[in-house]
Image (cartoon, rainbow, N blue to C red; front, side, top):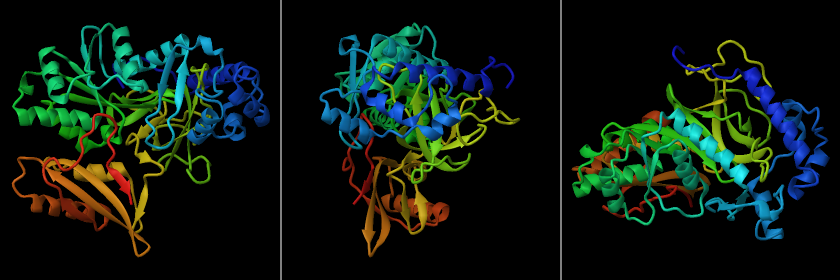
Length: 442
């Protein structure tokens, strides 16, 4: 812990969260139609509610609730605390887990989220003078725009990669002297492999840092290692967020497979996905978030659907004390998620009695450098689930059958699970610029 700046204690974090939560509960009634009745029925007194009382009394909110609200009151729904004319930004969810949801922000709420993304970049040691390349098309999705503006706020030279094909992006990254690359883990691998196949000289690239998000792979060691190998040892830095709540976490500077929740902006809980009750540290549960600074379009006790596991935090719900040992090695007392985002609640499957998360499968497959791409299919046979894996080898793979046998053996040894592997011809599996979709339940 030597050398780091002093960070707020758990007690200080809880005190500030209480102030922000009470302000939020005072501001919404009579202004935000979506939450006014929910606050009234919860009996959460804005002037005196504690974090523990809020967690007990206030109902959960889900993506289905927001989707139904926007369907009943199109196009933007009723989760708006200010008049519509005050809003200047509109973004939307990807729709991969249901109906697309539109989300509006005022200049103030947007600026607050830019500050949060800037905090992610600062934690990654991005600073003025860096050249930050955003390797994605600038569509309606939230994170891209925030990353770009946050880098500009830090004084970086921002390099947009929208409107370019992957080959052109690789050339642009090298020729522009980019020092920081922002991409999904899958697309960082894709760009690196494309450069290798086309003979592009990444050895001349100045990229020292790759900030990834959008998939669990950012906290999967095998995936991180693959990215580092392709990009000449560049550091990989993970974070996560979502349209409904904004930027949420950043990688622990001293523990790469751990994410810290920015508790200055969020009240976080981890609950059992079935019962909704808090789970103790070390047990996987669903991340529930309350936005404390995005009051113009808030989310209160929002069930994110993300599976996480708590590490280095006191208690099993907001409001716990800060006993000895709860502080992370980096000096932070913020909630730490060991292993990052493990997967989605609805993605975890029980195959022959074994709980399998997408991130666990990825960690066992990506350790093979000769895997160019993969796909996992979950099938039901005779009332039992089976796992089948499609593997596309790289062009340099000399023995695809041996590759398949190694993957089969690894699943058997690490998870005591029998899987079948099918080799797919080169180019036979899809490539992804946005979030990859490799997990199919048939």
